[in-house]
Amino acid sequence: MDLYRAGLSVMAAAVVVALAACSGAQSETTQSAAKRRPPVSAPPSAKALPKPPREPYTIAFGGDVHFEGVIRGRLDADPKTALGPIAKVLRGADLAMVNLETAITTGGDKAPGKQFTFRAPPSALTALRAAGVDVVSMANNHGMDYMQTGLADSLAAIRRARFPVVGIGKDAAQAYRPWRTTVNGNKVAVIGATQVLDDHLIPAWTAADGKGGLASAKNEERLLREVRAARKVSDTVIVHLHWGTEMAACPNPAQRALAPKLVAAGADVVVGGHAHILLGAGYLDSDYVSYGLGNFVFYSGGGITSKTGVLTLTVNGRKVLKSEWTPAQIQGGVPIPLTGPAKSQAVSAWQGLRGCTGLTARP
Image (cartoon, rainbow, N blue to C red; front, side):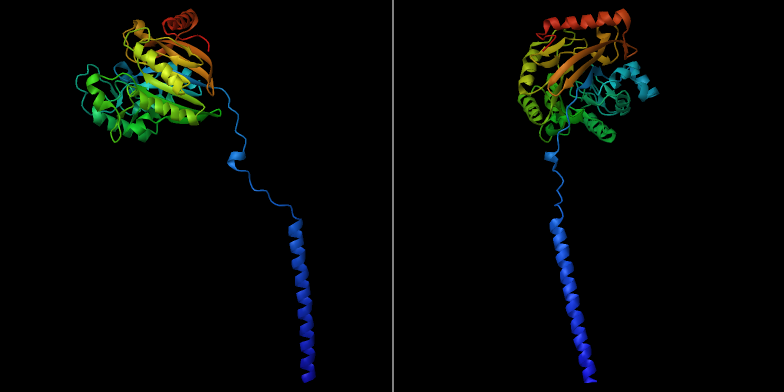
């Protein structure tokens, strides 16, 4: 029995040795294979990826918009068609922008001492989006026509609609903050501000730290600081201004003084309106300035205040490659694009407005 057990022990020991040898060989083979396997490359970091090339894009600008009078009827009937046939022009651009010259509210008290006050229901934002408008400025002399109640209602409507709006906010940081988007590889920043405010309303309407209101271009240093900051992280910087003198066909001294400061701070495009009529546009050195886009979706009694249109710029980075004017006539509150000889005459007339601006037809 002892010899039998001893034999079993010897056999077990032999098996253990054999298994150990086999295990050692397998381990060595695995390690060798691992050494022979080419290393797996780590995925390239985002910084290492090639930047997509920028391609030219188009941006269309219309003038002042409210929804009073006959236009309110269009809005109430069908917001999606309220802007009429001009929507086709706006939708044809990669981006489109207008000045929304109204509070978005159905309540509140009228601003004291104002002859004209404008307000519209939240469906105004539905109408603009349906017409192809991507962003609006509410920095103008009607953006707070219904004071703080109207401001609160406007900001709430903007949040609910998730519609991009510049020039207005719960405080100065929000009011001056650019809207940012990327189109065809171009990082675009849009800033809105107003140079026009009723003197007695400036303290109440101007956004400040901890106080809601509008972005004021009267605080030039704050506006220029925002432009400089946007320049550092953007390919194209656009400043939309409410500026000018009502019914004056040439830019006033305040406009002529502010435009070059904005360009020096880094703006590539400066556009705006307020005068109810068209003003000239063109190049200030290599940058583009439009001093007045006139009325757009607006009640108008005809005549010079009913002349309007869409300014479409082709842009690539900091370069404005092309400008195009699509003339229109306001009828029933909405712009109707012109055709044929009337269109050609209106384009020539618009180009002629450049004569008193100090701007040039080419960079």
